[in-house]
Amino acid sequence: MPGEESVKRTEAYTREHLANERTHLAYVRTAIALLSFGITLNRVSLFFLETEPPAMQPGSRSLLREVVGVGAGMVLLGMALIAWAAVRYLRVARAIDRGEYRPDRTAILLFTAAVFLIGAASIAWVAMS
Image 1 (cartoon, rainbow, N blue to C red):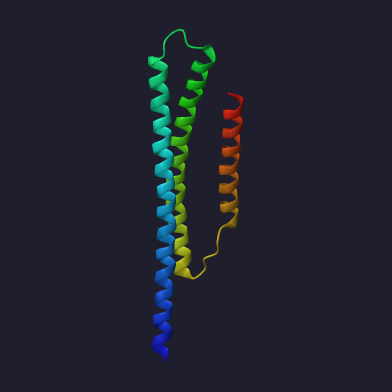
Image 2: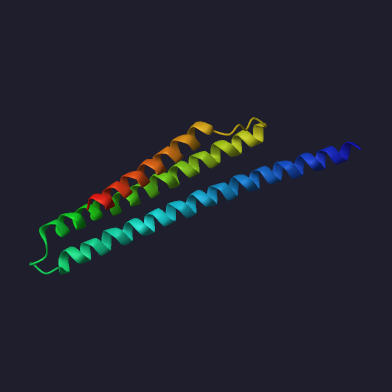
């Protein structure tokens, strides 16, 4: 029946757009987590910098200053991720509408590599401090 093919195409089309929305929401949740954790790191380290006794070890003070920067960096990364998620969502939605969607493997590999490198740098930083 000709109507069945149209219904199937409509259902597949709807599923593709819903999957795109779920992916976008996953990026937004990740960005919110980065923003929240970055703000928390920043504020807590500033609190410790302001309240620590003057007799503290000199190294602990510089470590706390570095954490302030890490927190600010996480906030910036979260903001960049939100912007990238919005651009990606719109591009994918247009590609689905045209029937030309292809996964962007380069972006996936770059994002994975960036997160891996940040994680490796964090482990090295923690081990050295």
